[in-house]
Image 1 (cartoon, rainbow, N blue to C red):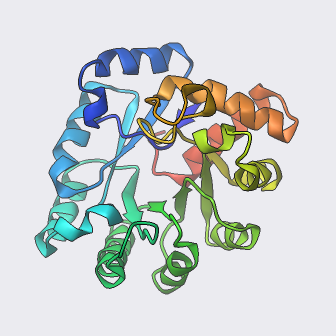
Image 2: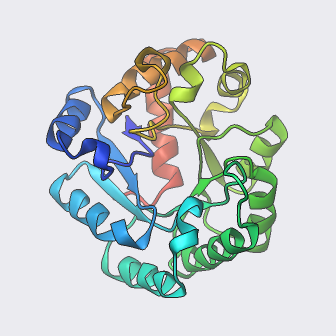
Image 3: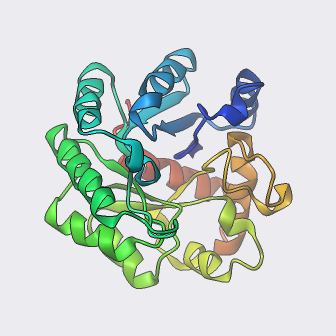
Length: 254
């Protein structure tokens, strides 16, 4: 199976990153997608993906980092994509959950990165927290090669709109919490062909790790088992289909 979203470069993994990577492989995780969040970590993501052959990079400026982004960072993104093979432009998008979001600035960097994704014919990995409708509006203006709506928590109608635009929807640890009724219903009922697995490690911990636990890619098989149970299918069927979905969504090597 593939972890379609993991921030393995995060400081939380500095003490034991090799062991985290080894545990993931031992657990049956055959690939880990590492999305960058700002220009400052493009190099770290590239280096990790050279050091760990099971890791695949995406490059982008996250909406929560645009406050300190510069226009030159967009050109740096272009230069990185020219130099490094990437599976997507990401993590990009809009975040209306943070206090007093600068919507105009977020939208500017989001749409400029959509243009870059079109320029390089790459899919995108989207951050869609409390912003599905606004993101869908921009995606209809700037059509890209699909991708993944990470940590999806929208409505069934919004899910259908993303799917129609060629996107897969990411589900991870949030789905494992018993009280997360809305996400669990989506995970159980959306078309299986539209779902990909993710951890968002070190964040979005599953229920068994608790709210403050550190998530990691080795948790993915247990997360997948929860999804298989919610859908009433075998774990093998779920893993086969979500692996194919991730490969279809991203610019994965053959």
